[in-house]
Every structure is written in C-alpha cells, then in structure tokens.
Image 1 (cartoon, helix red, strand yellow):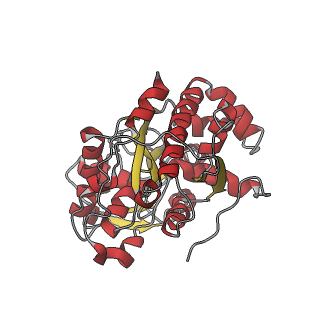
Image 2 (image 1 turned 90 degrees about the horizontal axis):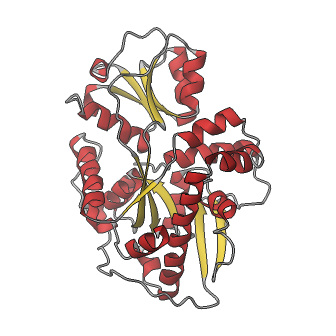
Image 3 (image 1 turned 45 degrees about the vertical axis):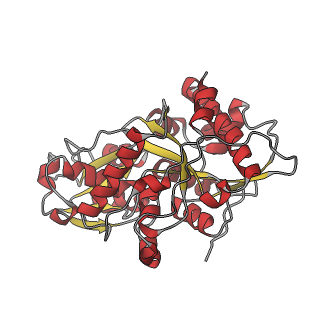
Length: 354
C-alpha cells in the first residue's frame, strides 16, 4: 500500500523535516521490495532508445515531484523554481522507500535517489528510469568502530558485527569497502538497523563497527573519543540520480516538462555549489532551525555536485554495483542495469551547464 507523503508546507514537524534532510543524503530503497517482484524478470522495463524529447509544454501540464528535502530548497533559493511553464505538485517524503512506493503507486512523476534503488528496480522489475546523474564528494558516509575497538582497517572487520541499513547506500558502501580487501558480506556479521540507531548501537558496544552518515558520524565520534574511523573504507564519490518511469516518459507533455525541470535542477545545483553558506543559512538554519555547525557537516560533504552524462561510463559504474550486490549474495540473480537508464535528457544537462 502507498503511504501518503508529507505535503510540503503543511505543518511538517521540524524533527521530521530534519530527518528527511538526512535521508536525502542516503536516498535509500529497501531490498525487501525484490521479494515481491522477483518473478518479473532480471532486467526491468526495456530502455527507451529515444535520444531527444518534445519541447512544447501544454498549458495544463502538471509535474508531480517527490522530494526528500533537497530539490525544492535549492530550486527556490536559486530562483529556478519560479516561472515554470507547468504546474508543480510537490510531495516531501521522509525516506527513499516511501518515495519508491510512490513511484509504484503512480503518485509521482520525478524524484531523486542514490545509486542503490536503480539496482533494486532492475532486480525486481519495477518501472524506473534514470534521466540524470551527478556525483557528490566522498565523506558523507563513515565506517566507524565502537569505543575502544581494536579494529583499525577494513580487513579487521572479518568475523565482526557490522551495522548497516540493509538495502540502502550504507550497504553499498560496506560492500565496496569489503571488496577492496577481497572480502564479501558473508565474511562479516551484518546487523541491520535504522541509520539513526547505528551510533547508539556503536556506543553501547552492541556491534563492532557500523556505517553511518553525517552529521551523525561526527557527533558520535566526538562523543566517543576512543572510537575511530576505519582505515581504507570506500572513498568513491556518492552517486545520485534523478529518476522517473518509462510510463511517465510515454506522455509527450510530461517528457517536455521533465526536460525543463532537468535544466532547472542543473542550474539550481550550480547555484548551490557556489552559494553553500547562503544555502545553509537560508534553508537549514532559518527554515529548519538546524544548528549551523550541523548544517555545515551536511552541506560541506555534499558540494560541489558534478553532473555526468548518462552513457557507458555512468551505466558501467551502476552495472559494477549491481554485479557486486549479486556476487555478495544480496541479489538472487544478475541484472542488466542498462535497461533502467535513459539518455534523452543529456542534452538538457549540457545546455543548462553552458
């Protein structure tokens, strides 16, 4: 069943908004979704071969946008959210799983996630299409030890209890870290917890190590000086995607609106890259009442964002992650991730960057 989103501007509790902002860094998607659709095939919906899109937007066009606390603030503060030649219906979601459920229920047209959900979509057969991709710097995720642990490097994790949020970017981060020292998930004792519960589990000594996110990681390490960052953990950029569905892409009006939206998002990200302090003050501090130091941890580890074209390199990176999930036993079969990507909006990204 589709869980209703928290509608933007309708009295959202500040704690919920703050957690939504944190979840935006994670953009999670539950692997449990694979179970219900596993029989639908190994590759998801067939990729659309189109390399262009309509540009005429009918006056009555509506674009339903699913946000996790990142899209609307950057668009509004940069000025890119005004004057759209279509109506925008915003819905704010507290987590990636809720956003993916909204896509399943045909309740949103476009949103964003990290690199794990497209893998899950390809494995489960969910209709999903990646239409733009960007990289954030490494540093948003941290592999940390419990206080007083003798663990120093990723290789020391063998046989240890490691906390992650299963089916999320946290799991992908752990798998990449283990792969770098020829270990797999089966070589550690995985404990699945909510991302907000991992620091407390570490502090209590319930687990030996855990993957957590900023600002939770720095807060935990400051409060527990004998805990440490694990050396050799994954340092690759954080990959994020703007996603829609092939069903949405079958509507010429929606296609055209998405082209405009993609361009506005690229320009908004460029503004945010160059105005990080203003973004922190006007959004996190003034609107969310988040302490400035906490907000800086969130933003400084996510800028600058760099857009990359949908093509062999970006798809190849996604395929490598899909293969890693399969070889680690997380997915029951290999998947063809290319079927989830759509190249038609590369030109919109390029034009917006000029």
